[in-house]
Length: 269
Ligand SMILES: Nc1ncnc2c1ncn2[C@@H]1O[C@H](COP(=O)(O)OP(=O)(O)OP(=O)(O)O)[C@@H](O)[C@H]1O
Image (tube, rainbow, N blue to C red):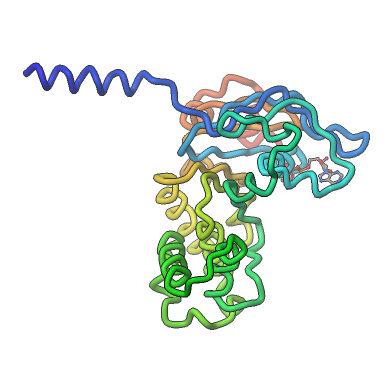
């Protein structure tokens, strides 16, 4: 009995503990040259959550997600202010290793973009760069990553074939497997299903649900039904501002801001 009470207390304590954040975004502003694209974004992104970013075209969704791995800085005219703490460290800090950040934070893009190489070579590309040479280790990484991306059974007998020979949905899962091969902590997905048919889309959505056991996932989507189906939390962006960020059920059932309500009910966008 005493043990049962102790377990109950333990469980209540766990439930009441605030969830750890993988990212804490503080007063983030971003400009492309003279044009401001993000305005004073503040947001804590939960560890092992699926976080959806929604909003109309041009509202800053891609810009925001690409800021989380500092990929946005590939555009030379970009300037930022504010802070993004990843696991407690400001990624804009002087001497912060962008290389390490990108090892921890993988990215999957809108259009599947495998390398023009075999399926096997696509997956081992990252691990090889990190110095792994042993064939058995690489074989194991390929199997684990393809299983993680729910693709192993479909391709295990043709690992040496060019990835371009796969369907669009399979190519996207190769890209996800390539991302898993470097054992990331976070996976950023920028409209990963917008170029895919409904069956491939459903497979990726199912996969996201499985991946969240082990990874924090931040996904940009135009598709509100998709955000509602797969995410724990949703952020609504409009004109570069974060209008509302809440758990997905609340945001879609009782939005706090009129602009969110107008968007999710299809009044604009
Ligand atoms: N490389 C760039 N140079 C200059 N301005 C840019 C660049 N990329 C994006 N922008 C501008 O930043 C703003 C936000 O664009 P962004 O692509 O982040 O929006 P989005 O919400 O992802 O749009 P979409 O849903 O259409 O992909 C837009 O005004 C866009 O024109």
